[in-house]
Length: 246
Image 1 (cartoon, one colour):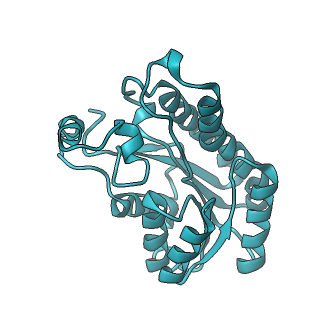
Image 2 (cartoon, one colour):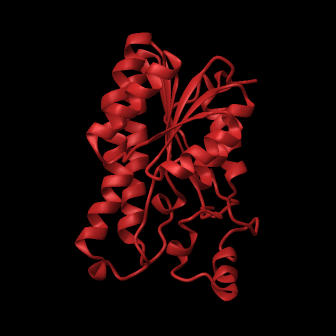
């Protein structure tokens, strides 16, 4: 019960890493709001876990404001913000990525962090405490070819994490990130371009521990960084990647 008494928002919580984080947080005693563009997926996960759900497009200011208001109405407070929602473009040379794909990647992966900060940080400041966890990626540390704009968006997220941490630390607010390697999530096929045994084997050969990240891996790392056990930890971008970035 390391998160007992705490309330959390998890964006993109309807599947993949977000759902794994939600499961761990509920098991550890947190009250959880699962926010997702796919309201049916969010509701399904919430019903399974005993959490709550809301629909939100985290690239839209009005949706983020409503998400925060809904969470405060449900729980009375917000202690933890998990910026997990993310997207990518299909692998392609830098010059071949369409402008719409570029804009979508930066809206979901970057603008969302700005918008959630805009609406949640004032609440944290008023309470003199709070924890933000950004789900970045090993792509922002050790980029893969043909995913350049996705890589760049996650590099942005890592820098934003450190900058927010320095700025908000004197106010009692911690900001960290986790950097997963690709895992069994809806984005896996997009990262690889195609999902075949040969492509999987080639991808896995770059991960020393020899497997993909799992939602459970992310939940365990997120739980530590958002718990009081990590009260002296801020500005850390923890690689949960089986040694991929060594």
